[in-house]
Image (cartoon, rainbow, N blue to C red; front, side, top):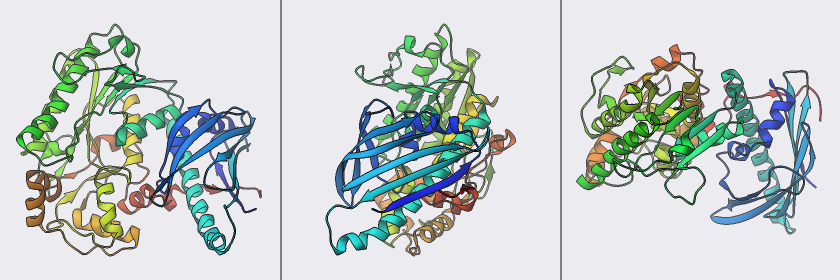
Length: 469
């Protein structure tokens, strides 16, 4: 039976390593971008006989995978065994071997057998071995990155409410926090869902204030998708109102709490600056730009003023383009680039200010414990022209990236939305974050694309284990 083993020496204690893996959010944090896996049901945690039902994709087909947890040795090991799924046999043992008070070896050992017999299995075997090697290299690097960020922050257990907790950034942030031992209270719009109910659709919208008492932080990310359809007058109003009204409803509710949170982190966007050409924007840039996105960002930030006037620390993170294959701009680009028909948009000279999803999550976590307030740019230190981004993405995928999407085509298909989102840009730098000591995991574009697409750049690689398996 084939066996795969990956061992890494990590600079955290075995107890912390085990606790992180045993937490509810760990599975989501360990799902490699190469894997299309989601949790359908959980029955217990990692105790003996507890089960998790997953859905994964084998090619275009969804396949369910039922795993049972066995062999739990607290602080040392546990095993996942496939009860039902795509393999004839699959067992995955996690081991945590102490190497001193602040170091441990993380070992993942997988034994598997493919279904059926014949030449197909012989052909698939090497592919599966390569995929396991790449996946577990990424998982070990993700484990180390998350644990070091949690350790550096030094927070006790936090209670954090998140709006937009099912979105691209919100879901990743919620998993990061719960894996770190923090409590996440999602703001939900249906009363039958777990969390704090709120109705952000009108200025007198309802908020379950009792569920928000005693929070350490509120992170507000909810808002209508700006790229969800052509910008008709009606759609523009929906986009604006979802941010302006929703933010004000939440900010005013927080001011009425007996014990309000220490910080209200209410999202914004670098669209605030408008189309700036080669001008470099940081948080000292006071004048807003022109255009619909700038109008939305200005109203979005102003809507958090009730909390600010009540004495709460309010931060408005101005998010750049968040890179992830699971959503946003990168996810929309990937099919064309993988097919070899991607390339620059318009002139390709417009500035593209981006941030990797993991760094966006890390920055939001950093803002909970910092003293920063007001606008904070959440972008990587190195903005690039859009044409350079296209070439970097093509290089990472091993595909050509020379077919341009002409400005006239963009305008004809997408109208005003295409003009502002694709043909204009901002050159933005994260001056406040860097001055506050935030460490980017992937400050360079090539590193970020490698990492967010399931590879491990050298800067994030884990140290090989010091002893043989």
